[in-house]
Image (cartoon, rainbow, N blue to C red; front, side, top):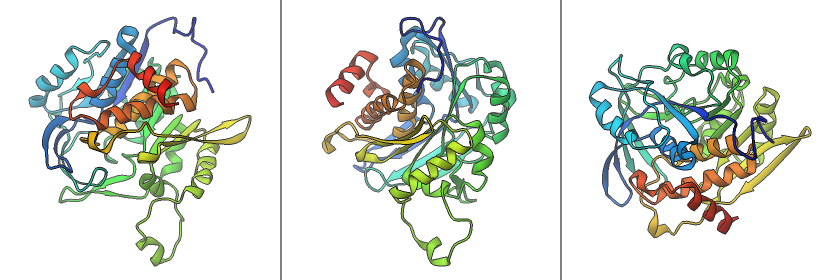
Length: 337
């Protein structure tokens, strides 16, 4: 279950190089407790996570388009983080995401998008083709084109991780962000090593090509018994691992071992409901934990443990101060698993 053999006593013989690709939206959040928060989201979460976990052992490159007016506050977030390089935070188009999120409960939220990031192209990524890992975190379907992933797979040996949050979301003319079917899924799968999503997004990825009207009207997540079939389909196209997050239940991990499908449920890290503040960014934070662990040990199940710990830490704060360094994360893993 290891991706590469570039190890010396458990450490790489060179610094890791990681590209984290997606928007840095300016978020206005109303939590389910009524607290209003303004912050920069999406790829900021895994970047902070990776910096906390790697320290100086990795060079971490955000790749994004933002407004010129947002450059100073975003640069301030990253300026004191070990390993974070700001060379590819582009302002040339002077455009970036603006998202308003209103939580109905701790998980369900209404999102409205009023600003939009130009798509991240293969030219934007070109200086980073020697990266060890590419973490793609689009929030809507227009932000990262398929051609960008194709270019990476054609010119790089780096691991590609994609969050399906982007390909399964679209936006209306009123700024409403809605679930959509990932109709061209099979065109994408050959260029993805690790695919991550939640159950609602899984329903957008595994669907009938013809169905009755009544089936379209059902508003239920994908049944758990269908996920192994979806995993097998992904693996036929070259995907190495599939992660399905299950909120308080944890995460399901699918991979192949000598041709056999393996399914492992990695339980969530317990969090007292009274300590839950804001779930914004939990999925992005989860992906950061995955990226760290897959690079450092390559074990799919172990990676879910790191991802669960980071997701639990994200729940317990509205700022990045809730993320703990590697020593503390390892303690939580040891106590939990």
